[in-house]
Image (cartoon, rainbow, N blue to C red):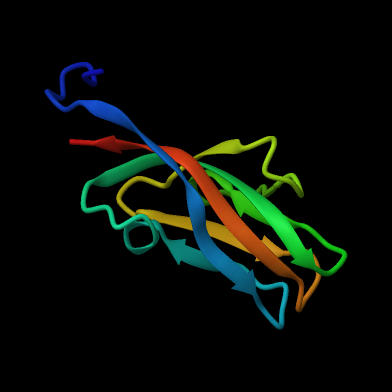
Length: 114
């Protein structure tokens, strides 16, 4: 679908695989380089993600558009969340609610601009 007036098109890329193992000894905010995780060279507009908690008691929180509000991901792969990526970053901002929890982050698809 072309963006109005831009001459650029957006494409949904199906993807169904784990993109990261996430364990941190803190609850600070971190970023995941989606271009690397997805082996993608185009501009990433949004990404559909969900998580699976391997160990721990907390949640993983993702930040749409790198804003100030985090959305807790479901703790199963059944209900993915579509996250808007901050323009020009190709990265996903996240944090853990409990230090040392272990999560697997999965992607079900993403939108690129070309």
